[in-house]
Image (cartoon, rainbow, N blue to C red; front, side):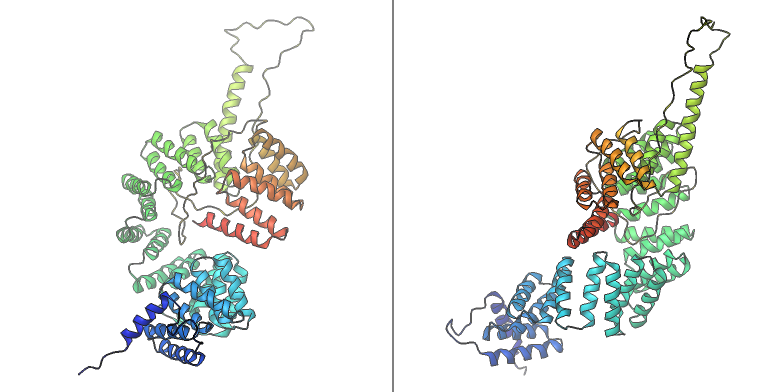
Length: 580
């Protein structure tokens, strides 16, 4: 005969206590501290042996016996966190900190809550308080390291993960975190070594194999990257991200069949993810299967109609099939969605060039080069378009200067009469100059006379920003765009005062020219005029809320002006805009 269990009754009591903390023995009854401590110890023992429901009931009874038992609130809050009941968890953890402001573990537990809600600034603050209260534990340094990593403070993340490793050498988590921080700093060999340590201590750490594959691919060691992804997929065959990354690696290895297999499986696992369709469409295009490529890219646009990347890719397929009007339409729509997407300008400019519309190609490629000055391919195309336009201008001038004298009788000027000029001087637009460095955006394929390039290998392709559309600004001598280009030349030459003067003229002509505001702010920053610089960056961001480079520049200016919190917030926003 089975004995009745007491657990359900305790659980019912726990639920009642979770709703109200009014003691059952009356409002005037004195706290029973001895009973409260006894229940706390029982709860800790139950939690230690995996009996979390009983532990929750014990902690609740400890709080009923003594409402000032901070440790009971702290432990119950941790259990709520583990159960995913975050609303209840934060109430208990806030109460624990109020009752015991010198309790380091309470701050550490509350920091975990803030980190789980992506409030990393508060998480870092609470982790730091816990450490200052002598909580020297690997999980605390690992937690703060993760928050530093999430806010792009990579050097600090490396320091915290290193300290976590010193406190516990066999914990794989800080090795993984430090590896990711090293990868973000471009130290891919160090990243690979840390990922090796992580999987040595935990051979089934599936996501580490994916991160290690990304590091190997950055080092150009593609066969080793593929081996890591094989391991990841053996552990979790349904991992869409691992499938997509292995497909990209195989594409770079020219294993088109293997790449198609991975991208097709990724689509089967998640038919709503447009990135897999774009990736497979890229492989089809390189294999010259243009109808199949168009079908995949069209599906990507259907799934993400406001993705500039998808529109540029589909436009490429239209051009490859000779549907040039549709291709130009897609590129124009991409520019309207994201006027700062350099690849969209380059792709449309390249299409114009292929169609012999050299003046329109020149205007688009100038804008692309201004947005992405380090792109040598854009510079090369720009040079070709400029040469074609120059040739057309020269041909037109030749016709004007040397008419057919067999059909036209030239009058003989009277003695001393002025000789008319052959033609007016032709003013060529100055090529745009680089703006302050900014992260290079990920690229979709652009239709060029060479075979399409494989999709860049990355963990998560960025999502297109959706700023308010701006019409293209042709570069005309004396225009705001021309003055902006001239101002950027002064920036490149280090003549910051002159740059400010010329860029101010550009802004006077076009007050909504966000690129000019950003460039002038950079010149002010270099002259250490931080207040003026921040004002210019403010205006650039107001005009274009997705202007990542302006956020980066404002972060630098705010840091120089002593506003560390504002700088950190701007750096995080820039990171968000360049990685989504």
